Length: 496
Image 1: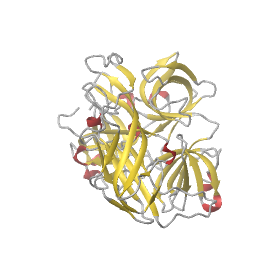
Image 2: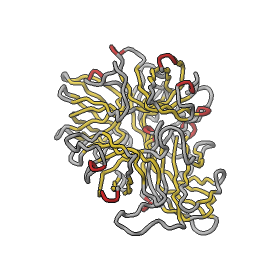
Image 3: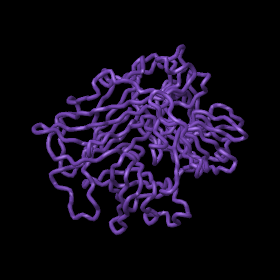
Image 4: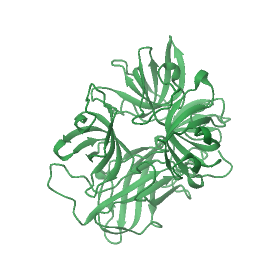
């Protein structure tokens, strides 16, 4: 991928292992002898192979105190799926647990069920299952023990009453993924742990959380959500919480009164409260319970019977059993489909369009409404056989893409820099060109920076950055495409 061995630490996950939230109707408060503890994860295949999707399950996590039995950090020991692909520039909140005060000497984590989706542009078929110039879904083996124990720095750590504590777990994929596409978590520098700073510049580090609203407690400014993996979280709101994407047909108030049972929402977690509840920085409406949506990355655009057809690599849906993570869906986009941009409060510069099927582009992340009665499953495909799904889109909404690469040019006068993507990992690219893709990254006064000064001047040529923003096809398909950056995260020493 690169001649100097840059460790690939993707921002896989922000897994919070904090004091469990209480039922808002309960009079029980968090005991003074416990405190929130959090764990966050942030992230070379063989030459000619691009990893489009990487997922692994966290099946166990525990802290070992200086004396006594280890304390589990996963409620009910339910495995948590981690989609690395979507977490280059953001993180995702996963779980909570109540941890007693005291000194802890080590953290033990167990992983299972890695899954890869790759594009094979190498010089031969891979394992006789992935032909040349083909997108393939693989279930790699874990070469080394999947259980890892971390006992060196930052350990030992002390948990103090009512003082949140967090850890950042880095997956370095160019070390973890072996030349035969197996996974070795025990390789040197494959997985590392650091204590999460209590505050970071840029967006809150606590991540995003998707779920279905279960109960709303208006008098207490709280509601509960249940995630796709069955965990329930209590969400606090306050005067700083913002509300996005609630359609006027649902609510015109644009406030907490819009939140209702059955809605699917996205929470940007602003902080973890001492009692273990989560304070929402932003609550974004996704869909009503009666609707079906899917989010994914466009990996191909074509035409058939006069309609645009896109192939989506699926990353999220409220019903993952029908629309599985890492599965591929064939989506027909008729002329009647609506188009929109999920910009929240961000202002998209003029001259950039996402209004018709001609604006669809490989590499875009989109949320697609499923036209009622069109969803079908034509059977399994690939070694781990997710369903082969097809449906017709009722609407297509442009979501922020996440792309990592090297800064190769900076135009300060126009607030633009050129990003050259890494061909091995998660990139929107021309399948005939395996050298990476150049993207013009447009920054604005609203762009947030992390790991550098809060301006474009903090970037330097050859630095490695992860950007999150809206990817647009330039007029007449000219290159490079333009990505409007909501955030830019500089990766010190090339780690990302």
